[in-house]
Amino acid sequence: MPEAPSIDDGNFDENNKKLLQFFEDITSNANDVQKNVLNEILSRNSGVEYLQRHGLIINDNNDDYENFKKIMPIVTYEDLKPDIDRIADGDRSSILCSQPISEFLTSSGTSGGERKLMPTIEEELGRRSLLYSLLMPVMNKFVPDLQKGKGMYFLFIKSEAKTPGGLLARPVLTSYYKSSYFKKRPYDPYTNYTSPNETILCLDSYQSMYSQMLCGLCQNTQVLRVGAVFASGFIRAIHFLEKHWPILCRDIKTGTLNPQINDPMVRESVMKILKPDPDLAEFIEMECSKESWKGIIPRLWPNTKYVDVIVTGTMSQYIPTLKYYGNDLPLVCTMYASSECYFGINLDPLCKPSEVAYTLIPTMGFFEFLPVARDDQGPEKSNKYDKDNLVDLVDVKLGHEYELVVTTYAGLYRYRVGDILKVAGFKNKAPQFHFVCRKNVALSIDSDKTDEVELHDAVLKASTHLVPFETSLTEYTSYADTSTNPGHYVLYWEINNDESDETLIPTSVFEDCCLTIEESLNSVYRQCRVSDKSIGPLEIKVVENGTFDKLMDYAISNGASINQYKAPRCVNYAPIIELLNSRVVSSYFSPKCPKWVPGQKQWLSS
Image (cartoon, rainbow, N blue to C red; front, side, top):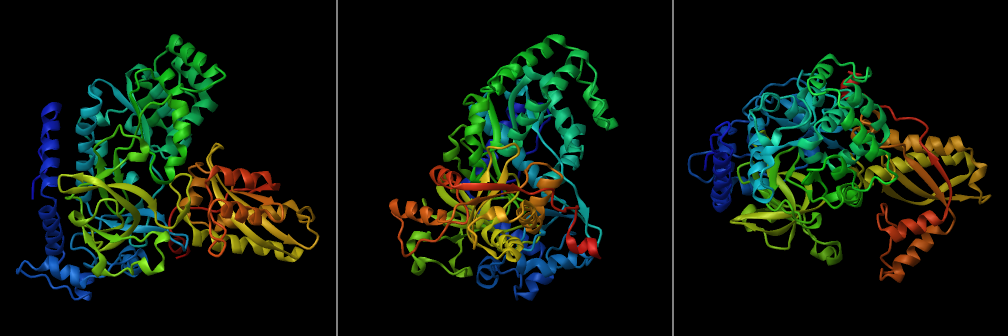
């Protein structure tokens, strides 16, 4: 298997050539690389309990690949949870992986409201670093001279917890930012940020955002690219600037730092950058005082060449806002990753957001693909989730859709990631994929992912508040409203009331319904509400009786079958949202934040 190249600090052109050649080699030999990856994973983990439990015996006959495909089942998180719980509780035996589990990476919430815990090992940090190192060589082919300036990226850590067995449990990016790979990284033009490490590693979201924005403004002419991980995070930063630019200007004008920034390490790092600059403060004040904020990004950071954010999947809802603030600056999606594994990169970063395709890197893990049948193909076309249906990386077909299944060095074997991908093309022998959607996700504003089942259960629980008023919920749908700052969930409720007047029900009852729904949603949603402040209070809009009949009429007039029609549980089509909003009779918001504390519920009660 091709070895990752050694990097020579300072020789950027040579390093770029080495990395691009490495990528060329592994994609040209993708099938052999993938088989080697699987064999390496299986040989090093041959004695682990999980593989032995399923009867997989590793030998020297070079048939491990075929035995693996015949024997090992496809699994979900719920299948692995008993083993993961044992590790979290302190069992240090080789359950999933022969190497010690160094920590858990927390993924999106399960239907039970808890974050998933993804096991990881120390060496995975090196694999993630390798993927990051490939980004600059690719970008440099399209946008030259990026090494002559800086990136203004808004990066944040989130809270972490410890399992009963003493292992850290935290988001994957928090793990990376707090590692030596990030904190002690050698100089690299791609990770040369306007934000000092101390501002990124500050857990106080206000202090972190304020200090990162201040540093970005102070170095505005050096900024060549701006971004965040998700589009929602970058727009949140622009909204922060809209609210706080007067005090930011005051700091720049006087060279003194807002006393609300009281973290000593943050203050020290910012004061190395902040100097009195009345001219810059006047320029920022002039731009921010204008009636329109259209094009505010190139106005304040005039040398910006692109905006680097994820705008695929549910993040595509933010594209119009980004174009407004960016004056149509290119929107660049560079990489595809998750808590389970880092997957691939975009080799055509200046393409339209709708055309983004990620080339999977064959060395990151062993990838298989479960064919996905379209809803319109009928039940007879749908595939059972059987291991015999899985397709190898090099055998996927152009234009077909698949669910991604991954086997990792850290102890996941044939794990269903839940992402639906569509084959868009090939880089040598390695396929390139459009991200279609997250399986079963109905609503998302930030890093939250709420599926239809979770939403339905929450709505049923909340609707019990109506029973004492001889009222019931007739029908409902939902919408992720990103027009507000921050965005929030909207639920449209049609209720059945004998008096046909929901005003006979106290406002507090509907507010209790809102809060009950929020309390019932997963911990990622609640963290975004309580700690990150990246999601606003949930809203229930009560609509006129007969509204959902109108919704069905609209769908049928546009070709839907009256026999197969069912009310959608989530909507995002503008005409439908307009129809619903035109029939709203009253609106209610959650009166307070739902309960949330770091960690899993069972840890807190133990």
